[in-house]
Length: 213
Image 1 (tube, rainbow, N blue to C red):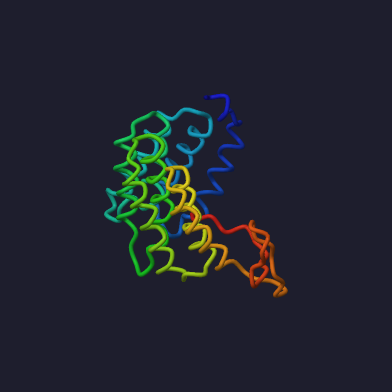
Image 2 (image 1 turned 60 degrees about the vertical axis):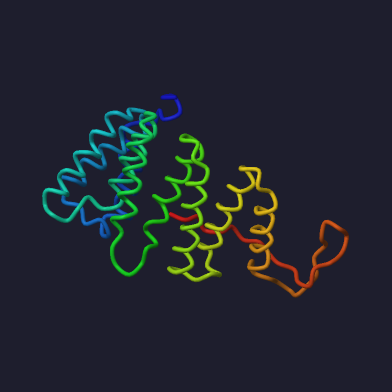
């Protein structure tokens, strides 16, 4: 497994720095906590999941000590490190904490830890119903945050449709995908061929939907 994460320390540090820069303002990390997160991300990319877990735990402790809470990112990364070590219950707690730490008017930052939690339930803990509940909740959050036609929302619906298909609920999956097709952008007003040989009323040009963070 470590071979898959065998990146140079320099590359790992740069990647971690870019990741941190994107989220630094919203998480309001102290400088010390920033250092721990960057070092933890580097260790994770090198396959040292235990070392990464310890670094993320220190970042959470430092930020909690200043009274502002560890923020969403540290909890998510800590959960990733726990999952990589098959500490599934610890990963679950961390993802749930990350979802609860979202503050302000928008719940959009909860989409990323929610997706990780859904994958954890489905792939590692055998809790399909819990995974379905989380994925449905993501659709609700995205709809409230971005609108029903936004790329982020459509991506969340696509995640739910894929889950239903993997779970053997093909009718539910088909209905969700059909709903997605109706909401995708249309172009040129040209009919498209259906599987039965008939035509639909409008053509559409699929575009890659933006994955939820």
